[in-house]
Length: 292
Image 1 (spheres, rainbow, N blue to C red):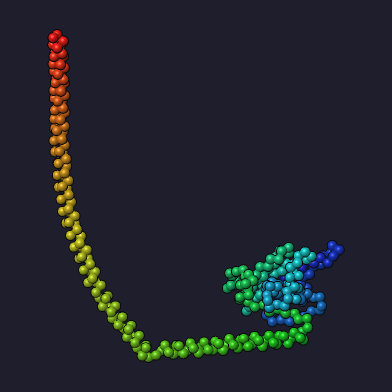
Image 2: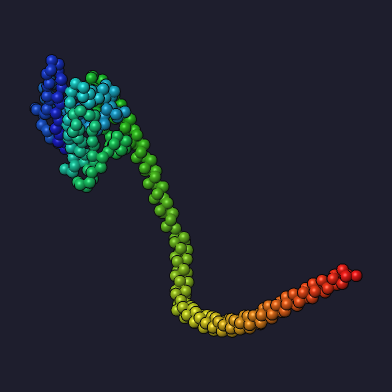
């Protein structure tokens, strides 16, 4: 089902504006419909607007002549176009398309997911997920031949895909059957049984290993406690001896320094006395020599 609405304001010259809006054609279509109406009842305009909203002006599958007509709708120098339409599938909204600004070419295409979430589809994503088929032939009789040829090509491609899928399905079934080889299944079952037995044995050993680990931790604690305690006592003893030695050496050193100072004083006094005596003797000897 499709619901739509549009407004096209076109400058027809002499400052006159002509407005095109849905009239004879209803604004709601079923999924399969024939649009009937006299000439100039906007049938082509409506189809062009829907194709334009689904990137028909950019699709390589749309005839270039039609693309020119679609792009002409976006020429806002002499006309202004706004439109919106919604496409439903099994009464569920799938696509929502809007062109709200008449003075720009921006068209927003939104995909509706689970009836709530919406995501904007650009041209590349739309091309990946949807296929717009749009054609208005100038000569319908000749165009029918082209359509039949295209249908045959599509059928051939689809048949090839089905055959390839059949080959894939056959190979997949064969692979599944081969994987059910009885001897191989028995080997796998034996390996699984052995692995489970080993796991059970290991699980039985876990409490014993945990108990042993606990005893080992206690022994290590006791050993290192005694070792570090003895080392501490020995280090304390050595520290006390060193302190005593330092104190003793300190006293002896003080005595030696005092004695050195005392001896130095005595030496200085002796030196002074010797100098005085030397001077006395020297002066006395010199006076006797003068009298002679």
